[in-house]
Image 1 (tube, rainbow, N blue to C red):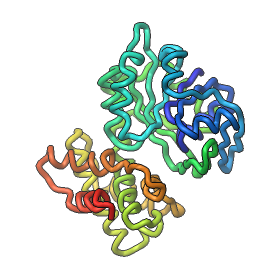
Image 2 (cartoon, rainbow, N blue to C red):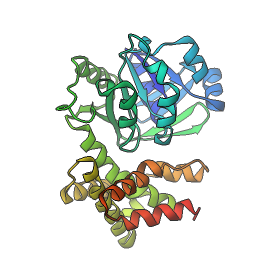
Image 3 (cartoon, one colour):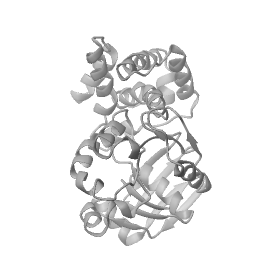
Length: 312
């Protein structure tokens, strides 16, 4: 496959390196000192099952626009921060919708709004929802990535396969990912799976950034653990605004899942430690916006978001 990886942070670099290592042609997009370092030194990715240090094809957005067309690629994978999705799709709308362009876009981002934003530009028939599951991936230094975990992918055509049946090549993409060493699973209802992931993301990410504790410290603590569970309940209730039914069983399953993991320093905690913007709007903000639509309240989510916005 010929793949465009939009975003070369921990997640995009890891999956892109896997795919290149397996023989696929990958074009990475990055910026700043990270881009310059990769151009000079190659991309280095370390993982328990992958030691990758190779030259890669990488460019900034200006070069991408000048030298490539969206139709040059078999698949576009989006791994930028969720807060940048709306601006990205607006900026690249004409490029993404040029004549004869049918390239699908796979989102591997946090949150439940990315697929909707993408589909409003390219249509549902080109929109694939995805989850990067059980992976930690971070830029250790420019051009150097450290990844941990099983690094699975769950993907499906958005919002579900009854409304948007996948094309025949969908199974081939899944097989190609598997062959590249990426455990990949198809789901017929990706919107439901995105909300299940948000149960965990909204449950632990903001609270970890506020307390500066990892997931194990949070979920094993009597007060913080019950707070995580309450936030998950508020998240499950918010899903009703999107027509997604989340049960208490879903909450229990995802709470027990994150509680069983080894200690994980969340992406939001790392962003706060490095003074980077937090993905609050794509997690807590999405939950609060749905509660507003439903006419209900999510007081714990609202409190933690307000504290983080105050810089506490």
